[in-house]
Image (tube, rainbow over all chains, first blue to last red; front, side, top):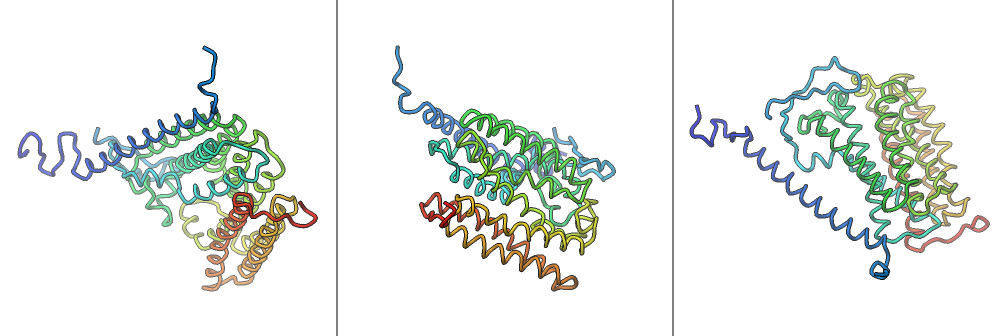
Length: 60
Length: 323
């Protein structure tokens, strides 16, 4: 007994997720994106720190 | 995807009724954070940082921060693997029943993947930015906590937390190794302090939670050998801990402030352990257990925080004759 194609009777979507599930998934996605961004910055800064101040001083 | 099931049947307790969870992750971000045992991580951060600060060497501040992060995440990963393995007994203990896996918010397979990813990532990262000795020690620590303690010792012997305590004692050693690429007597002493501190700390808790542990079938000392034997063991370990706690001052890397803090707090630990030894029944006994458990946390933080302050803030004043 579907109200329409997008909405199941218990408010689950086609993937079977409720509004709360979708909200949590969005939070997890944002957290993952922030973590990845922090890792990119961390790896960059650590690489520079590891190479030292002479990173650009190399023979061509 | 919905409808996949996972059962909490780790740790050999396959007879337990499985708790079904949907295959799609249902956890919130804080559940993943909880898997890392943040309170244990905070202790690891303090002890590992102390190992780094006390070390006779220098490291770029950015690399020091990154190394500390790697050690903390590695410790968190081992906590996550511990929760994955122990989900079945966590479910029957009041203290742990609301953890993300037994509560059904995160599936066991998710926790396993999360823990393994962070374990491998933190070890590789530490090896690349610091050195492979510290990375090897971190890998061994994770292995020791997840496999030797969680999978083997915890359910098989009342000495579980005595031997397993080594896992919690390694961080200062890893911190020193990250800075110097070697291990000295200084970090061995810090290792010894945490190692000897662990039994009285955990057994004080186990005395008041013995029914929980008994229900889960975990042979903690109070269940396996009785409360009186546990009290005796707590007193003996505390009598050993108090002088070992003073050793940093005698070996010259703890100053006058450390000497004062370690002597006073060590003596108070002995007083609390003695009270627990004497008060064997009723509310007084429970209160004595909680007092020792609570103060043991303050004791360890006080020792390491004092070392941190002495070396990190330049407050170090050598003990005459022991510099």
